[in-house]
Image (cartoon, rainbow, N blue to C red; front, side, top):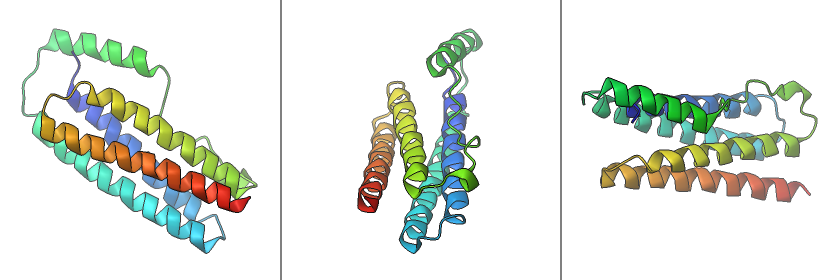
Length: 154
């Protein structure tokens, strides 16, 4: 239907965006506990990107049907719309409250979960699917940890 390689490339970019988000934010917040949390999140995203890159290497060796791949790309684009999975538009120097920054991060993590859940529907290999499900659980845990930090600020 579409090239899994293209989907994996998007997943790698999402993880790189997440890592950049957390490292950028880390440099701009004075709270040491939040800096530690953001560093942990950045490292998690780095690990996820490595896994997706390795997965990409294994699937690129399988030849596909060009017509099905083109049709799949169209379907995938229509599902994602204009979602960029990037927070480049967020100017962290203008985020006046730590809670606002964390809410943006939570939104990003939730979008990532949705993408990976969609991706999981196209994976047949059970070992790969289990690992993806593990990453989804980690991303959901990120949402919880960030949410707990927001609550602790109140």
